[in-house]
Length: 245
Ligand code: URA
Image 1 (cartoon, helix red, strand yellow):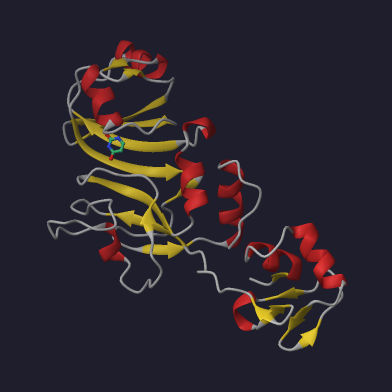
Image 2 (cartoon, rainbow, N blue to C red):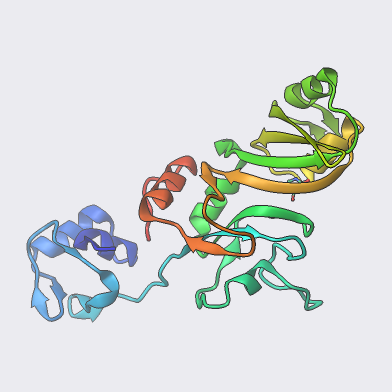
């Protein structure tokens, strides 16, 4: 993505955006050996040699963002010391050091973001920003209006009350009840524990939505790169100003 020269310089950690503008105006910045004094010109950082006072900017690892449709049987970690399959095995072509944004249980499937952008990851996982996740669960037993009310209003789990959730009954499926639940917390095995608290055992769990993104067009086990505007939207949700990618 082409970006303004002052932004490229500030992202390289040389100076703030304002100070970078002053460096440019002072004729201290060159692109491919040519001094650039005009503010606002855009360049692809990776395709040019940009220098400040003759010193090239340190190269920064490009940020990459993927949406994965995780199948069951893959751990949401970057590495497993016991050699079990991890979600990163599903993105073998990616050379950057990437990590999943949060976790899905080994036997949960669905939407998982994968990136090397630590600032975005922290923001999306921070409870303050209340980033929404929707899961479709297939559970045993009947989901009575009382149970749905309890799930919606908040339940007492071992680690405290759950925040209000949105719950929608989707119907019957092969003897199980299907329901969609939207939460913004991210406690360990939270959805399974919420249903267990109302006497329902989760037999299948799939995350269908995360931070406004869906699995549309991404079959199980496949992934796609996020588009620039999707990354920008995530930045806004995560309380960050703009993508550095
Ligand atoms: N809640 C769960 O119980 N499991 C998951 O994988 C995600 C949310």
